[in-house]
Amino acid sequence: MRLLFLTSRALGEARSGGTIKSAALLEHLERQHDVDVACFVRPGEGWRRDAGRTVTVPLHRPRSVGRLIASYARRRPLSVERNHSDEMSMTVRSLVDTNGYDVVFVDGWLMAQYLPRGYGGSKLLHQHNAEHLMWERHAELEASPIRRLLVRSEAARVRRYETSILPRFDVVFAVSEDDRAALLAIADVGDVRILPNVADLGLLVRPTLEPPREPVVLFLGTLSWAPNLEGMKRFLRDGLPSLQREVPGIRLVVAGAGAPRSLTSLVARMPGVELVRDTPDDESLYGRARAFVDVGLGGSGTRVKILNALARGLPVVATADAARGLDVTAGGDLLVAIDSNDVVRGLTRVLTDDATWLALSERGRDLVRRRYVPDVAFRSLDDALSAARERS
Image (tube, rainbow, N blue to C red; front, side):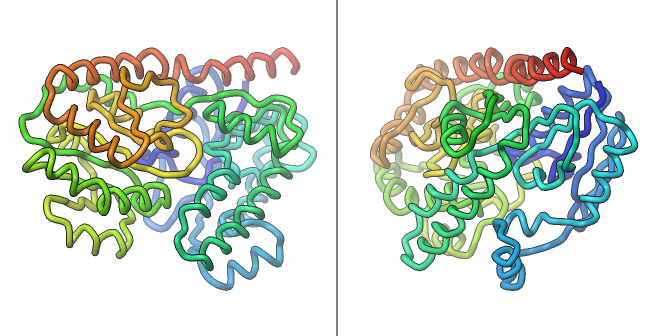
């Protein structure tokens, strides 16, 4: 079948959770289908593929008051406004008219605006998150009443927009059952299926880790994302001092892009905490750590960072919010904490008990191999494409 894959980011060097999933989806589709891609590229980005045609459209539209005003005037969320491009609209229309695609696969809500009106083939939408739910939970994390009001206002706009785009698609894919239920609750969508996130497959083929002697805890994720940022700030204030009393000499490595000043200044005041802004070599981080912690709060979807840590064989301690949506056994595949004290207890076990470490390391890797690799996780996509072939 001939497919057009629409994505908002170049996938040549997939490092964030969203781009890892998108790159895996594209590679999976390319194994069986003829796939062309249309995507945005930001300044300094580039992308070359070995298969199919790749059409890139430049985009650089940072947040500004003018764009916020324009988003209200055009009645669309700010993120959608920032990813709006007349050039992309014309590019996609030309590709569809010229190539007669059997399927248009839209990778994420930001690209739904480019599905051509009147397109007669199969229309598939992959939602990385239930976006309105993510924004609603984000609002609850805001301490400032004014910021909470602003985020709630944006959440309402996201909800209206998401409600409007979902019915345009024959099949909508959500990453978890929670997200599926949230999407079905806001829109009349005939077919919403689960398309789980996957780990970076390269992590599974790396050598087996041995439990390090040094008590190093790693967090690796985008530090500007509100669930990560707020969760880490609360852990630094409320959880880490207790952990340092329980495990003398413990070091916390906080790694990832986008750390705002509020986090960097907090880390600078905390003994035993190391901030790593640039992470081109994740193995240097995984290899020195004895535990992975995800103290994320709120959010939607599922955390690829947890799947990656499990795939590498690094034991994981996660908050209930961070583990939400993953098909895991708490206490077996990873340790799930209900509060900061529980996070401390879980990390203390992993940092001091080799038997616990070894059991979690082995079970985590096995879980990813059984459930969170493309050949297993993407079966619902294969089924949808088989049905589309039969209809055409």
